[in-house]
Length: 150
Image (cartoon, rainbow, N blue to C red; front, top):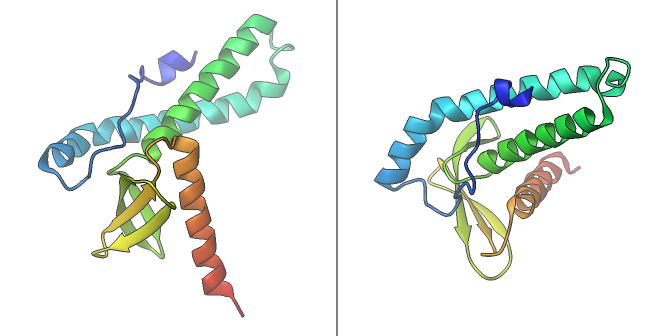
């Protein structure tokens, strides 16, 4: 089911390269249609699954088919998250677009905006997608609290 909606993803997706290098710029441009397709198709898959998830046994799916479909949905949801949190992806803050630049270092995680076009996220070398997502979410929440503070 989901394999017909979304293409095969090759792992691992590297998030270690800086988006400013010529090789990365070319790869980002070449892969943009694939990323856009992944986002759109994954969203379609998740909506379709949400529409039938609670009624799958009544629709004739076996427990094994249900488990397989759930596994596929989770796979593509994780793939989407991984791509979204990789270097070179667009992130928005206060209506401005920034290219994400994932930087690995020891020490405290941080997010720094530089040159009004790049959002550097500093994370530990052993961090995973969930950690990068946590760092970004925490940063966005702090900025929001600063904006709405009385």
